[in-house]
Image 1 (cartoon, rainbow, N blue to C red):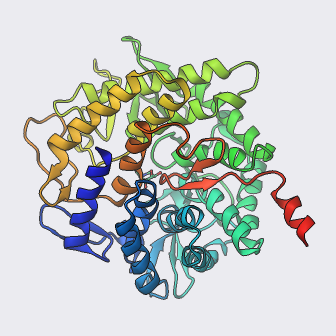
Image 2 (spheres, rainbow, N blue to C red):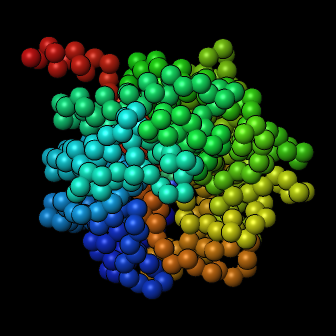
Image 3 (cartoon, helix red, strand yellow):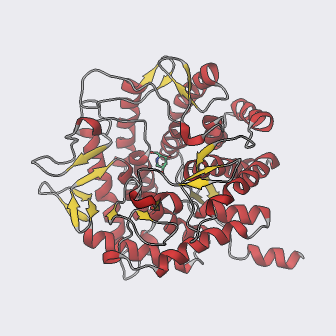
Length: 456
Ligand code: DMJ
């Protein structure tokens, strides 16, 4: 089924928005997001590995030809360093590792080089935004005191390690190792990482802590850096398990109805709200369970299972059976959105992602059932003639479509659904880690370096 969904999403993108970043499935035209500046083709690059894994060979071929002929980084464009890294660099790296086609490696390294000027700050903590022609960077105007964002500068590690591996140029890995060094020198309030860090002063901005938006994938990349290093990156490992410990103590709570959730922390006060983005953490806890110190393996799996259940409840308590952007545990509600501007669903993957990890790690059939409920809801409410669209209010009985088919719907949501219903030996976790946009990157085997040494 996810294959047919992919076909519908892809065919319509091709018909109405080919070469542009995303599709507007209701108005049947291209959608340009300023996250990618003038770089074009986000959906194509994000979808490459999904097409490959689903064995959609014709489509993969036409996507590859587009990349060869049209993917151009010599544009005068201000881009989001984070978004371009996770979607374009990540997408190209995966396409290369899966297919072995040189063009993807070349483009990934070329783009990586374009991103390097973002690190030209007093601390080496990169800017959020970069003009890839002039090399001038800056931060989001809304970010606390000119800060860079934890989930943005903390979500470069996996891709940059692979860029060094594939190019032979150590500079990429050096840049991301330095980010860790800066973080490790800083005092952390209660062992937590604030979402804001000023790249000039090297000081934290506002003490807001979140495992959802602005924080999320920083934690994910600590764990995955360790896994991707064939469990040799002890620093990443320690930072991950220490962070989880602090998160458990200060952020994880249980509602009176028995639902475990991850709250947000604002200068010591809890906001009892959980974002859809935060739901990825169920899968993360389960994925990290195996390496948990002090006999905590079972506990981390259990934590993953509880987050999965809470996030399923957030879906189940809506009329459309699709989850809201954020849900609350206060004012007498549990796992329900109370504010109008938190009731939307934009085809995000995190809940299905967690079902996929929980399925692979426990084989409890309920995760496939929950995934199937999501498929039915997507087909009923998000599928339109011209592709798939987000929904403005999941508590309403009538769809109001937002008219955007997000590129991550093809790279993540549909890929995780496909994996949820596939055998475990498709992209097995021993050999692959998924970047935060669901692009699989191979584990770098311990003895690889030696092999190369030996060959010299
Ligand atoms: C994706 O780009 C990535 O999953 C990112 O980590 C968070 N936001 C979207 C999906 O919701």
